Image 1 (cartoon, rainbow, N blue to C red):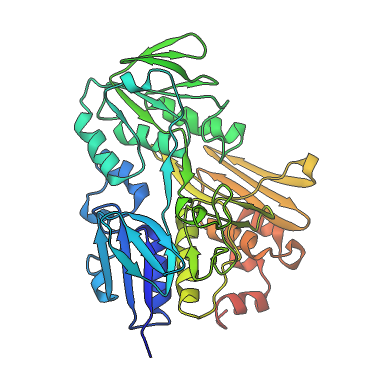
Image 2 (cartoon, rainbow, N blue to C red):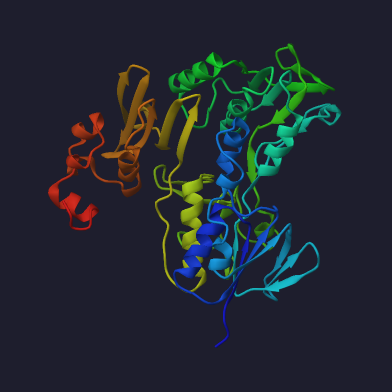
Length: 417
């Protein structure tokens, strides 16, 4: 019997999940990983911590250095998959090589979105902040007097600001949104995080953005001018969908996948930030570019590529963030009273908890300052646990397993109570 030939396009967390998913079923068939970057898989969220001096390049490895070898994988570093020939069942590389496949997983991630701004080409020292190479290039440009302008007050832009804050003269962050982290936090919670950033020297220009660059001078929508030495573009990202779209596969903002991570094309799967799947907390399809989901999607794809069966049907948005010692964890969807939802709120000294419920289940939460045991809330959302089946009044105050019945605890703990 001919052995299968698995190809994974991409070398991020979704690819690692895919490798481990394949090997959980098929121990011997060949796995080839196509990696545009020259590095083994690393934790992308750690690139800001590297600049901050909180980690090293060696410690950024997501798996041990011998991970690929121990799993019988061949990794092609510095190679790009140009297209998939679904008729011949080959993946064609940028050097002309054709790699045959039995099944393929597209785990191509996302690419920074750069808006069209007049004069952007006149800026000499400009950077993105998505990859290790971005971080290393930015590091070379920094000095203690650098004036840095960051366009984008989302997670990428703000983590960049934190990472370089002690290495530069000044940092200005601008964004058209009315608040920082606008896709993650509501107004009041965002204000708490913004205040901590401002306490550490970060300057904000919200509801404002660049309309024109002239060398190292930015003209803002408000009419203000900002002079800078280094520009970081962190406006957002777009899913890398081209490989599937060019084949006629179903694509929206991301590659459409089902609960088995299958695309609309035979023997072609997709996982990670390039995909669009069902957000169970919202009941709608969306791109969920989040590390835990990427891994679980990859594992699911890997199992199903072998002919096994695994479903990933509990995807929800999740974020674990922190700036200068103030930490926040969020998950799920926030429904207002006009949407039939309710919110429980609890405030403390430097802490804020908001739990969002609708139709008898927990749909989302925001925890700031006190984030311990957030996983219990996350599990309630993923599993859609009816709140009338537990003691939710206890869980509101303290996320503990004792809010569950003895039978529920026994099931959750594998028979141990």
